[in-house]
Image (cartoon, rainbow, N blue to C red; front, side):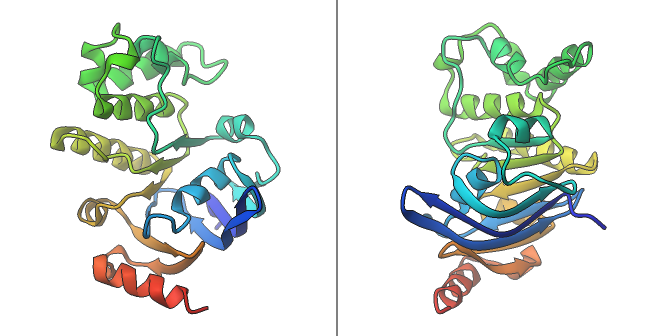
Length: 237
């Protein structure tokens, strides 16, 4: 069966500094895969490489199509959504207008349905739909960015530290969103430090160390100690 995402030998650079040294990762439809590792291990760089935000090489196949040479906007239009760790909202625009920017061109009547779904999923956003995004709290902005990305109906959602700074109720709303996308046949690549949350959500876990995947297997096999062990083993290559 063709994987939804099949990344092979992915390398990436910032200027002359190489950060990724041949990352292989497969994600099937319906899967939620946790990507964990220490800060600086290359997790966020891998996410950016998948969507074309850093210089990269290797193969990135999505739904059987090679995306490695395509620009970011084309990757997004093909169904890959990316929620960065930084809360990148348009501060002068309202919550509702920020959400509308996530709608795919030509969505037509589906745009109104998507907006209604976003407000149902995140009631806090509905309450503040006319509020300028720049005055929202950090946690509220995080929820807005996630909701805006979901407006594009991605088949694969790449989300980097989505629960950082969120209240417990908001964390549960994010978790329900991610579960829902997978139940509908999509997939999620979750970059997350909270292993307790990841154990509840993830079907599989991958550990990144020194710019490579050093473990790929059952999420139940991981805790903070074993993550460090796998990273140490990966550094001996």
